[in-house]
Every structure is written in structure tokens, then in C-alpha cells.
View 1 (cartoon, rainbow, N blue to C red):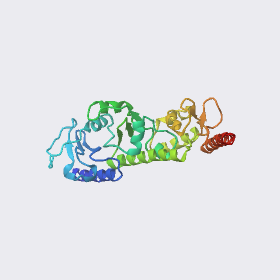
View 2: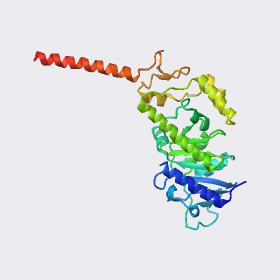
View 3: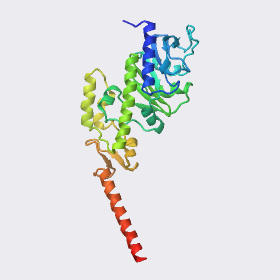
View 4: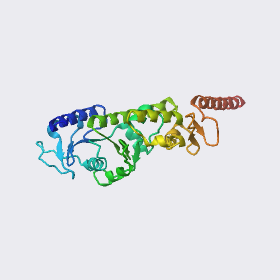
Length: 295
């Protein structure tokens, strides 16, 4: 049974509060929408924090983004409605879209580093491959045009270059779940940087994981090419941030270890690096002591 519009508006306010409480948007950033019919969409207004929405703030627009009824508070729809409508046009199964600025995920969008694959099962199952669009000017047609080529029938989340993220699904709650999982995954990735090591799932593990995903009714096109190494083919940019030389860093797809190109030995680990630094320091100190004695 479809929800009445008043209930959808309440849901949008609740989701907005969650977005604000989780600090996925600051100030009046971000926007989200719900599809009511083929030519009617509820969308958050411009110029107001997502944490302080009331049902009367929500705007009802048509397929062109124009108000179809006066808003009781005089609110205007978000200028990013163009992005939402473009997604609805190409994905008829999508009924909700959330654009936000989750900080950990946006860090990857700003750095231009693709999200690595084959790391975290939940991200693989619920997000799949998350692509990053090049920067496009907000509030213009350039923004949706930068996203559309990256969307296929399995896409549910994208990063927007130097901007933020967009998540979409069959309903607003599930789109919000995608947003939460995205930022949690990116936070985990950044925490691995502090730990100093990351293990990549082997291709055989990924094949098994994608089969499990398919059994959940979530097909993933990567299952057809995982044996050929398609999963993780863009991981190097993130892996090199662990201190491996960019020109030589590769991932051993079978073991999941980071190795140097042309070598079958794992890249230097933190304890080995520390030992090397300590040896060099000791040598320098001995040299200084000898010079002092000689004076």
C-alpha cells in the first residue's frame, strides 16, 4: 500500500534529521526527494538545514522541477532537483534520491581516489562498485550530466568529484541506509591508514562473496569477470597512500597483499621501516660522537 503524501513528508523530515545528526550535511547543505508519481516529486527546500524540517517545508514539484502547488511557508525547491529528476528519468525503479556531503566519503571525492574494492563485505553487498564523477558545477545541468554516464541498473551510490555523494533506491529509508554504509566504509578505510595495513580479499573470496550477494537477489555484473581480476583493478591509488611507491605498487590478487612490481616480496611493513630508521639513526649518532671526541 502506497503511503499518503503527508506521511512521506514526515518521513522526509525524519530522514533529514538523521542526516543532520550524523553530520552528513552542515548548514543548509544537501537535499533529498521522493517520487510520488511519474510526474510528481516531493523535494526538500533550499536554504534550510535538513535537521529542522517540518512537513510544511517540503515542496511538491513536477517532472521539470517546478512547483505544482504553493508552499504554505513560501519555500522553494532545492536547486539540485535537476540531479534527482535526471536519476528518476533513467531509473524507473528508483523512488528516492539523497544528495549529501558525508565527510569521510567526500574526502575520497575531493582527493579523486576511487573507493577500493574487495575490502569490506557489507560495502560490496549493499553498495557494489561506487564510481566517482568528475567535478561539475552545482545547480547546473552539468552536474546531472556528469553522473548519468556512470549509472547502470545496479548502481545505487555515486561520488561527485570535489562535492559529495548521491544515493538512490526503491524507497527513502533504503537510500539513507546506502548513505550510512558509504560513509562508514570510507571511515573504515581511513582508519586502516592509521593502523598502517590493509588486507585485500582474494579473487576467490570475492567470487564467493558476489555469489552470496546474488543469492540475496542483488545481482552484480562483476561476478562475470572476477576471475579475470576486474574487482580491485582501480585499487592502486588508495593502496599507494600506505607509502608504497605509486609507480610500483600492485595488489597480489590471490593473497591480497600489496607487493612491488617486478618483485614477489611484500612491500616493506611498518616494523621493518622502523627498524631501518633506527639503524640509520644509530649510525648517524655514532658518527656525531666520533666527531665530538676528535675535537
